Image (cartoon, rainbow, N blue to C red; front, side):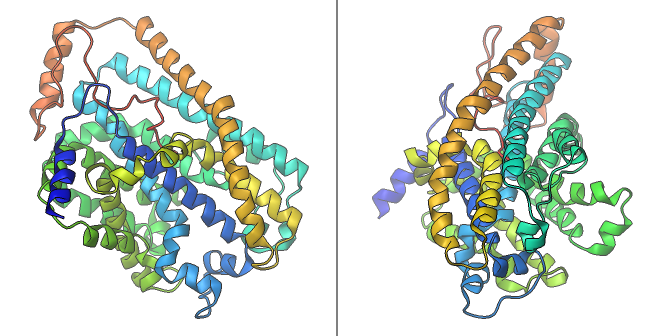
Length: 444
């Protein structure tokens, strides 16, 4: 056992090469996307829908009780999986800013790449969802979560295509892309704010503050008091979650060093998983102080899980080939699965657990096959196009004086606790981190 722990710790401390990537984060994203698929698949059942939509506590020892009020909910923790996506986005998109100073040209290129990378797959998913909704008409009379999927309108499609001001239920997972886009737009500003306030030095205090801000949005009185609360309430709830990921990126080497001193991991892993699903373990469905307390614990669990994914024993299983396959296609899985589930449930006519369980199990490979097709046809081309857009913007904008950029990089790194991750020699710096347009990007 001691030898195994020594090998694990040696692996945590191994230096990263210039072309390495956080493969385990891809794996975590793949697992999270599959959990969201399971969440929506079992939400079709009216008894489960009553819990999440109508906030009705399940009867003890029923199937829905086991899947909601016990640790088995880890398999269907859809909202918590989205929180993982948000923390991952904050982490991954901050990494390039830690190794090279931002300039006007790099910032414009970042926006160009990011918009293409997010919006093209979303528009492809909208077309796919619209096609299914027209082929299998939505039926509000069925009630519950399934009945909340209304027949699409032109307004719905237009709103979903823009993303910035909310989404419809044509493809309901798109709601999280609203906050991915907002965070992507605000990222340079938030990064400067972190630097100016030196929040990265006080990360151990800043992360609890961010958790507290996010939790405030769980209270109706706070939400109602905000201007344009239909937008700003969820902004208050979710943007701090991205900020947690940003602070983890600042402290990644310190976290890795701390991990090298840990000898027993299972209590940390088990504790993080239980904290993540704690809202339904400690409080009934609904809103209130107890539910808010559970949400605080859940965010703590999510934060620890993301940290464990790149420094802990979760790395090895997350880097397994099947998990990596899902991770590379996680965005596509996330975008296309829900219209497939809704259309199938409407055709079958779900009234209970049977025969839906058998249908749902058979749907999983169908979702994966279609997601693979969508990845090849839409997402992967969008990755290539986003890179070309970035190069085009970079070549079109005038280059700043290289000495001035070097001085700016020095200033940008001076306040960092650990300094720049790499030094550069020559005109092109080496980036030991995932490309902004790689599959490390958030599924949302």
